Length: 294
Ligand code: NDP
Image (cartoon, rainbow, N blue to C red; front, side, top):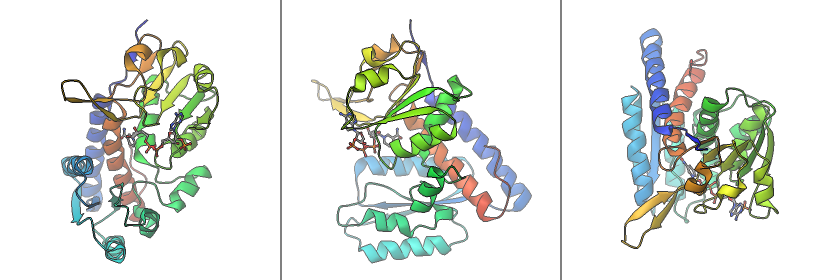
């Protein structure tokens, strides 16, 4: 058996297309252009790549893109002052502070300074709390992308057994809440979990968000399960070239799973697309418009 490959690249492109259509409609009918502000502190090369990609895709969707690049030694109060300005700026509907921030800055205080209505990363405690309470909220983009990818295979997740490996605020925890909202039965595993292989083998849906290259092996997977690999790990080969691998041993899992996301070309593609969705949703909510059709 060979698993169906879930094509994140294609699904993300379709989603971006639907966002662009809705952005055009909102501008035509209401004269509003959704705007996303991205704040990058320092010059981490991976973060710079992400920010460039966000800028390009935001503009391609017909939204306004505002970029703020600050030096790594920016003072905490100056960064907070910028967040305050963006909170008040009526052209900005979404604010994203690219993580990780330099160690000298207190990330939690910065995130808490973002207006929850503009918190398109879904990390503000207001949104995390609403999501945990089962209410409508701006939710983190990567978990949203995981749910969309899963639903291309299973339109309803009701009653399915899911395991989420990883419990970070960015991925694991919000993903668990989104799965609960979809009526899945969820196990959340982490570095202290025992018998991970056995837990995994019971799951119809496996989400790996660990940051450990190829940790989830083929013989952990229940035959026919759907595997969503969030991990992005850079490995260097003997030739000095680097390659990306996920948290799942792809070649092994491919032979057992029913469907699987590749790395690259899976979840990573969905994160920015869902950021655009969140910015559009935030813009509609801020202006008192009905939620967009994406
Ligand atoms: P974190 O490091 O914040 O969290 C990792 C989680 O994995 C923790 O909960 C940790 O447990 C758990 N863990 C670590 N080791 C083990 C183990 N041996 N067995 C079981 N659980 C373990 O990472 P993130 O959640 O931010 O990211 C996870 C991965 O997803 C990374 O590879 C990252 O690059 C990738 N990522 C990809 C994105 C995308 O767009 N595709 C976006 C964001 C992240 P504990 O809590 O006990 O420490």
